[in-house]
Image 1: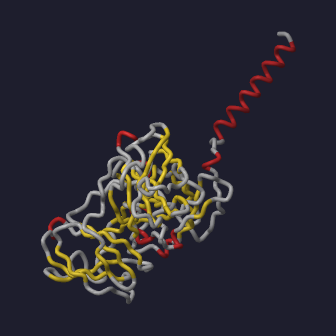
Image 2: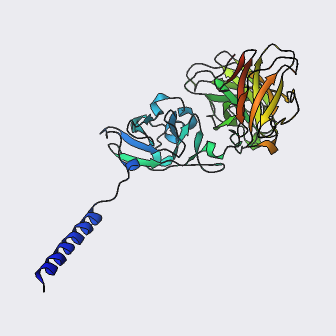
Image 3: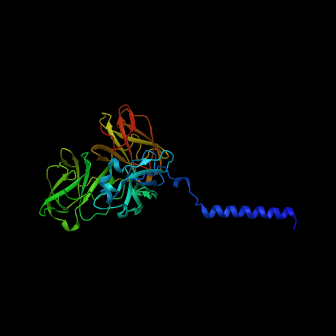
Length: 370
């Protein structure tokens, strides 16, 4: 055999053997799977590979039976830390000695973003992880879609409930919230300090905590005592007949009912306006993809008013058929000689605006307070 051909064959065989050796002994590890935090001998290290659309400023918590579920939200012990060298990873160290009621990660856990809700697999189906790694280990956890993926116009679908429920806008600042009840039935849904929060619902600019009353308890008359997990602070009794859903705002000082049904049915997306113009009238003219949309000059009148997170807004319903149009909004005083500069808006989301005689500013309803 020709020596050059023989040498070439040997070289090819050696190269093939090298590739086979590498492939059989080493798994491919993608960048987003690489460990970002140091392993600690006394902690469980979980690294969360966040769903698409997660931003660097997300506030993400881990919740599960092991840490009280939704009550862990807001507790810095369960707040994840963004990896400094990755845009898709958040990490957390867990100490099993702090786990409650003999629970472990195997009893189920999920992640919650204050901006985007809990993890969902499909509409109405919260994701549950059951990985149960030991102390001193590192584990990747693949995130599912955020709840916001399924929202329409920024609204989360209302959860399914067991009977009527008590919705709470919790402004107490307490580390824990529980609900004790006495009346027709004492210790209803739990001995002191009472029942845990059933879940949360992002709606109308508020993250509501809710307590499902139970279908079998419909019609009972109960006194509700909100307390800080039995740790020495409680609010005065609030009398409630379990025959409807109820919406309450609670602070460390008391309880206020804020409407039995805060949801307003809108025609398409809406422009919400906190009006500080001082005008006798406010109308909205639009031009752009469609001129004179919803009315010739001076434009459309206010559709109605709605209270969101304690603030009362005037709103203009855009109309379902107009979704997707790009329009320029001109607020004016009913065509009586005063108008503000154009505000560009694509009708694909609800928008909240602070309107004064000097101009228009977009605001966040979750944080805005006049």
